[in-house]
Image (cartoon, rainbow, N blue to C red; front, side, top):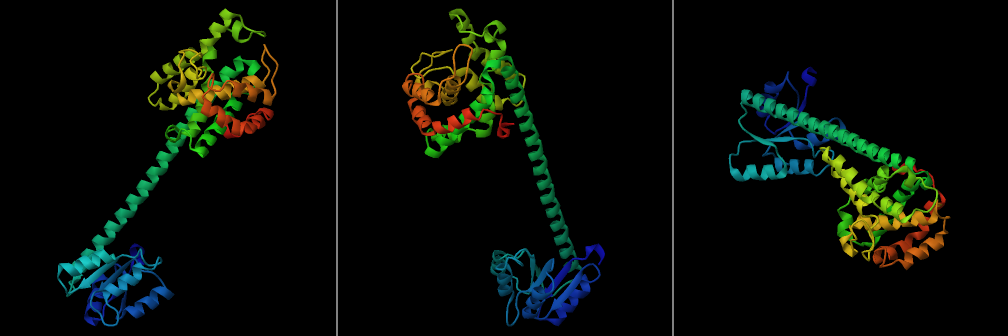
Length: 365
């Protein structure tokens, strides 16, 4: 069939109309005519579905309205376009036809040139519509692919910076990975219990978890003599170490200023700057109190302290999980958000599982 000949089914009880329609369209299209709707339905049920239906509005046994209703009620035929053939020329008939799903009307008696042109224009528009749909789908795939590429690049940047920090501080082995798990556990619990619902709903959880890797990025600016000291720090050294929160914020801010799309660093900056603030205002660097501390800072405070307690550090042995839990409970409404401490209490067994299986997990890489 030429032009991948489209199949057109023409249904009309007038032999004159069927003959005129077939002669007008044959050659360009594969035209199959039916003098009754019953024969038409037998054909499409047992043989093939057409690309277009030319349907007479006024017929005995089953009129055009009944035919299109039956077509549209069947998922296998609902998509087939229908053009009504009618000698009627009133607005109500057209409105009813369009309401039932017709795509056009052609008046009778049939004019072969006009019929050819109307069908030609219909298929041209249909082709353009399909090409537009394909173009949009392809464009969406391209955008999705580009978006995924950007996301992967962001994650690589975050992970690489975090690994630089971890490699400089050999005493905190896999601290970053464990903290990511602790953050995920707390976020999942917050969602499940509907706590801080509005704030949690506004977060991109995956990006939050990745961004948590940079909470200690400021340690890059701490002198090795302090960062790598295998003993407890002096007061002056500790005061210098405390500056890593602001150093981290400044590092992230400088990256943001040089980046077109820097929104993904917002979470990282919140983690870096506020994870040592305390609920009672005794933390650093700004001495913020209560809800003035951003939620991500309050969440990280628990995750970071728990990991510090249950791991060996130059100045201390690792505490047991139970001891760490008791210390965090004792700091409720002092160091930590009391609501988050209660939440932690309900999921601390999951923290223990992470701390006991301290290995890099592919979920975050």
